[in-house]
Amino acid sequence: MKKTAALLVAGSILATAAPAMAQDSDEETFTGFRAEILGGYDVSQAGSSVDDDSAADNDQSIDGLNYGVGLGYDYDAGGVVLGLEGEYTGSTAETEFADGDFEGFGIGNVEAGRDLYVGARVGVKANDDLLVYAKGGYTNMRYNLRSNDGTQDFRADLEADGYRLGAGVEYALSDNTYTKVEYRYSNYGDATIKFEGNAPDVQVGDIDIDRHQVMAGFGLRF
Image 1 (cartoon, rainbow, N blue to C red):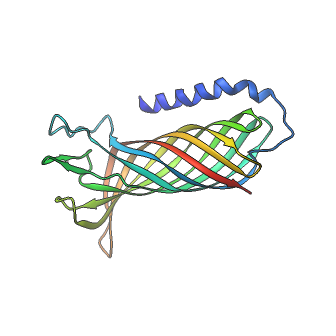
Image 2: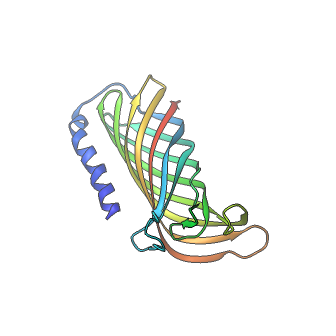
Image 3: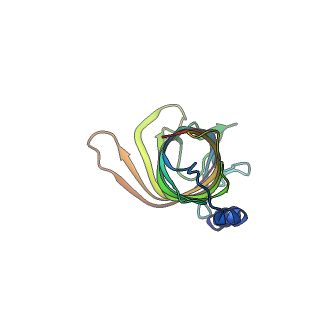
């Protein structure tokens, strides 16, 4: 259901800006390599197939600040912009003990680790300096496993593969600087526990974790 909603949001934004596709422009504002810094709000939560309501006030989620960097390349075809991109981000989100109640979301006591993303985006130019786009691709999330008291780290990570969908707007501040805001939805389904040293990996199998992010970015285009 959440995947369908994300697609509808992206489709609605693109449909609203569709008239701009018919406009020809000599300026290729959104062409070239780019590098950016990112920051925003991040929440991981139990998906529709996970339920750990041991207490009525368990919100089954963790949230925090998301931060990182991204690289990409765009080609401005004159109204339509096609691009490839990748990201490396981290998050401050972690499970907590609230008044003796463990606020988990189905995978134990964890803190969010690094997140890798690679994907593509397609956008339309609302005008010469404003791009409206949708994106999608592959993401690999790491959750650092911790002991039950919430303080001591295990030397193990839960790595999960999934997909990401999103939509956003990018504004060109100048020929080579820009800022952007976007919403992203990720779902993780295949997980593995990885230990340090020679201990073998443990295949957890299919899990269901949803991740929602609202991100802002500032970048340079080369």
